Image (tube, rainbow, N blue to C red; front, side, top):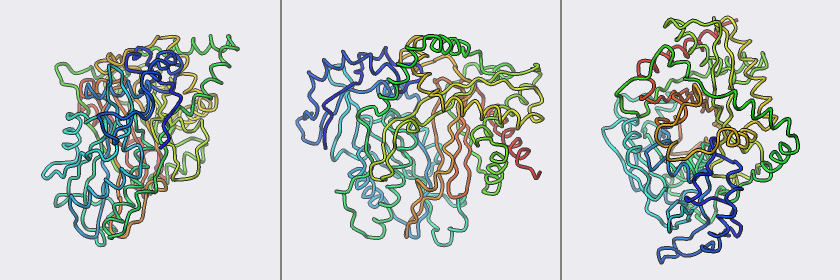
Length: 512
């Protein structure tokens, strides 16, 4: 492996530079002087712990530092439930063998963060212990909650398998006869090193390797998959945008003014459903399945009105929120809602078509969008969705996430990750992550085992928004999840909100 010679990242001691949006900001450039000293002190590829299995790569980036701080406070953890169906039952030996082969082939699985002399450093570790268990007599959500409270050993990852109990729903009933045995697989990862696309990539590779193991095939560990990004591929793009803003002072001032106007008022939900008192904050998840016909109808209706599916969902969420507070007695002429959109920043770089070299790591950015909603939102649904779609396209086309990462720290100042990991102020009514149809990027048609369902669990308690919606389509089935901070939104309120969203979906996709 070729280790980095040039390091432009921040050590833990420079955590005060971490920006609001926690990704791809000028903070990385401001840390160059600090990192230069560290590069001299720690040469890349140095052996650690007296073992050739440990090699130091570089100081941690701001994203890695920030998420490492979150995870040490048991905050902002990410994992997912992946359902596998197999022709024959199998056990721990096969799971471990497949995980070991995948670790040998996918570089990001061998990376971890560890402090050295007060600085957080990134390491590659060969042959590390695989943190894996098979859990009986618990639900997937219970196991996920247990994982959340366990932390991460050396910031690697943890895996759990929960065999299906009698009566558990089969995600794809047509496969039940051929693949009758069902397993729930949960993988928790370090969010500073992985994002959703990296997670999906892992499962594509793992599905094929697991099937090869069950088929008795030889797995060649010399062929690697994916390329972890040790340097920031967005650095050039960020510099270009920053230079443009510095030259055009009027535009920079306008961007600052716009950012100030986004100063967050309390989420609209709080106006009718106050924050519960004396409740321990954790994250609960509500998951609903949307059948293929309804997903296709939604796509068709959105396309015919030149609306992105993302905007269609956001219009549903906004409609449900407004109807809830209106029915609770909070009636206004209109409502302002702040949406935090999770953006895959790979859209701003050239991504190779070579599957074996797909860029892995953390590429998430954030984009704040404030929208005004009229009362009686169902009557204006598509009008509102079209406005959301136009604004979304305009922001993306004009480098909105990158501009926000540059301008927000100038306006609001940098934030301490320790504060962010405890009880930060809400900065949006909700966040939304829409990964659309992941079938092509994840599905492998195995002979012995197949992946049949994907559900994301993200823990947002003690974070920047009380609600997180996520949507994906896999093998024709849509999965919509709502994660809510129980310290801010009760289970009853969250369930009512999800019920209303599903009701709006029925309304929107009814026959025309």
